Image 1 (cartoon, helix red, strand yellow):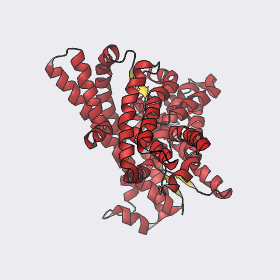
Image 2 (spheres, helix red, strand yellow):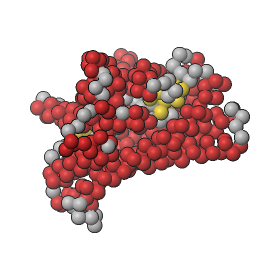
Image 3 (cartoon, rainbow, N blue to C red):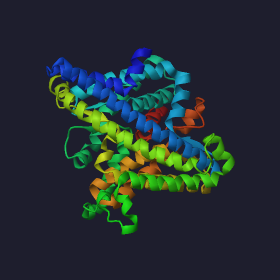
Image 4 (tube, rainbow, N blue to C red):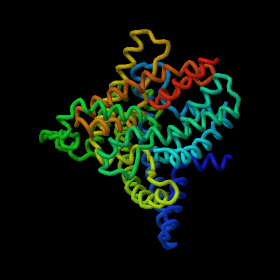
Amino acid sequence: MHFIVSLLSNPAILLAIVSFIGLVAQHKKATDVLKGTFRTAIGFLIFGVGASTMTTALQNFNVMFQKGFHLTGVIASPEAATALAQGKYGFVVSVTLIAGFIMNLVFARITPFKNVFFTGGHSLFFACVLALILKAHGIGNTWAIIVGGTILGFVSAALPQLCQPFMRKITGGDFQAIGHFNMIGYALSGLLGNTFSKHKDETTENIKFPEWLSFFKDFLMGVAVVMIVIFYIAALAAGKVVVTKLAGTTDWLVYPMIQALTFTAGISILMTGVRMFLAEITAAFVAISEKFIPGSRPALDVPTIFPFAPTAVLVGFLSSYAAGLLAIVVMVLLKFPIVIIPAAHICFFSGGTAGIFGNSTGGWRGAILGSFVVGLLLAFLPILLYPEFSSLGITGSTFPNVDYNVVGSLLNWFLGIFH
């Protein structure tokens, strides 16, 4: 079981296996099969190195920002909550993940929802959410696995379908779906972008900067400058003592610049990996679609669409993070029982993607509005389920993603009728 869980939660290996099967089914030469299989795995691992680099830098930013501005509350980051959930309900979570992937294939085969979900980390997080809710209502392990796995399999196939009309606009084709459990939020961002449909040609990628800001035309330069600014704001607010603990032997005033540039380097690495593995998996998936699950497409992680509108990613990140900070103010003023603190790495990947979806239908205005609303959802929705999680000892962190909380809240409400 440990082997299977490790396999399904490691998308590099899973995608390499899919690539292998697809290439063999196309009767490719042995050398081409090996080349395609390894390029898929290596490309995704390069992608993972970039994502990990970015996440680590942003987690350091989170620490400085929280300390600097004296923010206390529940961190909206699923990694810590997942670790706690696996510690208490590891068996149920693991088998739910396995059952969910199997049911995803079943639903893709027998329903109109032809999406095969390959973002293993997100499937693991969703398996945790479902297992916690079912266990909170006293459901036995067997039924928790059956119900949780069926729900996970269905949403893995069905929710990407909400985003597909916008994906066709973004990518110019129907060859891939989005596989990231904020899909209700992304579809909402695309719909909100329609508010500015008259301005959809005024995209973030065509913004005309004045001469003194012309460096923003280079995406990586723009990211570097923005990140240097926000890292120094956090570092100066946190002060020398806090930053020095993070910086180690690096001078505390040099550390923010190194972290901002490291983040930018991570983006460059990530996009290199995306281009490498996406080309391979798309070609290999043709045979999977034709022979095993007709009409199916791979649902892949959000950075696979970053190259289509990179400036929208930056706009979406800033807009969604601003929404998260506004949400903190609202929660404090209205004396909410808990305060959800936005995690910068969640806002970057989720808010940035919402920016792409809003931009596809409403230009830069749609990118700002769509990602801002998604930022509010990432902040407020976790409040609904946190009491259930805390009753099981899962405290201090929670699952921020829109789909977890929408589907999870519906399941919690339904089970509450009989509880």
